[in-house]
Image 1 (spheres, protein in one colour):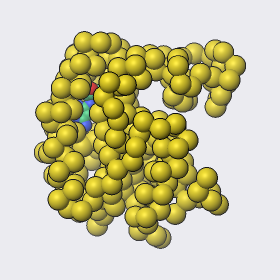
Image 2 (tube, rainbow, N blue to C red):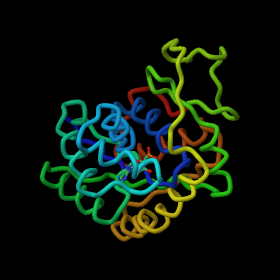
Image 3 (tube, rainbow, N blue to C red):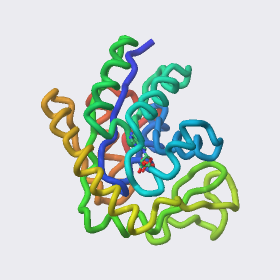
Length: 230
Ligand code: AMP
């Protein structure tokens, strides 16, 4: 089997990590691991981790490294993560970055690249406040940038129910940005020092960003399941 391609997507809330992780995972046959999605699922399921995380997430603060690292450790051993993982929203602290390096090393793997999605922060609040997802398949939409072709019907699965996140409100977004600067932005330096850091302009159109990401992923050994880089 070919070497797994494990990627970290870095960027502030609203940079488009989730949207692009879905697209790129699909193109390269990788699996997206969003700790935010996993935590939201734990909240809905009412697990211990979910109960502890709920209020923290709604406030826009960071859930403890222990909880998040445990979720990742449990998840990456599932068979669909063998070919490679896009870590979306993880790591978010230096302690998590170290934990991830150790988890991968213990499995004979290592990160192929950490890709920073570069955005103009003034645009983030607008991006975040308009977003919603299909409740059935998780496809992401936006009031201003990407509405379903037929209003009220998901382009991907035909679902007619959509949801918006509880933490996509002004006060939580402000806290999430502060947490990003305090805890997560130092990871840029961490990966730059290891010569792992790549970046793309994430202010462009969705398709353009995907294209730029594909070029980066190919440059670090990713093999697209599609024939060409569009
Ligand atoms: P996201 O969907 O990535 O925007 O994450 C939503 C919320 O889940 C964050 O604001 C945090 O409260 C929590 N969360 C997600 N990933 C992490 C992480 N790696 N470390 C700590 N908290 C996280």
